[in-house]
Each structure stands twice: as C-alpha cells, then as structure tokens.
Image (cartoon, rainbow, N blue to C red):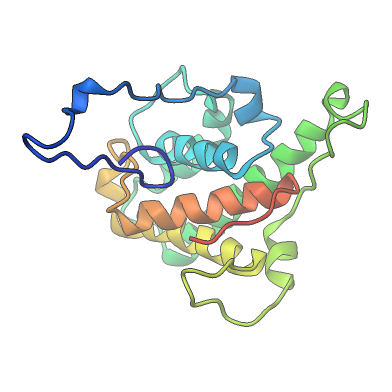
Length: 205
C-alpha cells in the first residue's frame, strides 16, 4: 500500500504489466514550516502526529521536523524509565504532555504574528486537556465515525499512559506501524487534536 488511502497495484503473471513497467508517483514531501506551524489539510496533521510518535517513543533524531519539541518532552520520557513511577503519576505527566502540545505550543505559534496578520490563514486555537474533556458528548465507539474532541483527548492521554506503563522497555526503539494498535490510537488522537487546533475538519479513525 502507499499513502493514506491504501492504494495497491494488482499484477497477474503473463497478463499485466510488471511492477517496474509503470511509473510510480514519488512520495510527496511537505515543507517543514507547513508541518510544524501552518497545517491546512488532514494529511499535514497525520504526518505531524507520526513524527511526534517517533520523537516521543522512537530512535532519537536531532534532524526531526519537531526537534524543537524534544527538550520539553524529555522530562516525561526520562521519568517513565523508572519502574517505581506510579500509575497516577504517569497519567499526570501524559496530561502535561497534552497541554504542552495542544495548548502551550499553540500559544507560542500565535506569537508568530506574521503568519496570521494578513488574514489569509486563520489563527490556531489552543485547547487544554481540561477544556477538551469538558466538551462532553455521547460515548464514541464506532471506528467509522468522527469522534469528539473529548474522546480524542482521553484517547491521547490513555494511549501515552499505556505506552509508558506497559511498553516502557520499547521506548527509544519504537516505530509507527499500522499493525500496532497503540501507535494507531496515538496518531489518530494526536492528528485530530492538531486538526482541531487549526480549524481542519476532524477525520474518522
């Protein structure tokens, strides 16, 4: 498969062209500033969320588009390497990560007034964990439906907490995989919360 829509190519021996016979579209590369500061489509936010997953749980990469977020996130990553950390502390740190990414960092982006002053782009809206979960709605269970911000916020915090509690020994080596439910939960929640910040229509899982 390629891209986010799961395209595939079917090849029959002796009946169809070989895989190399047809040109394939090159993977699209998005500008750093678009991913980091001015997303305008769901794909931009999904890409950001996948980079965030690898920044938090994968091999360290000083050249990451999100490298400036590494230092603020290191406190959580280091503290959770201890086996003595309690479950309530893990969740509290996960909530702090939420507030840094979707509230404090967005407030910092708002200070880049040159991005929003001309009115061509709508300025992003910060949202804290407390504000997100206060927007109560019916419980979201249908994976084909678009989940509420409250559900996405709880999913993000729950997933971060579970990774640090249940898969601590893997932190620093993890990579995003569509077959990893926790990774998909993380990217689903993080990308939709990012979409909410930037007035982009939310997407289903």
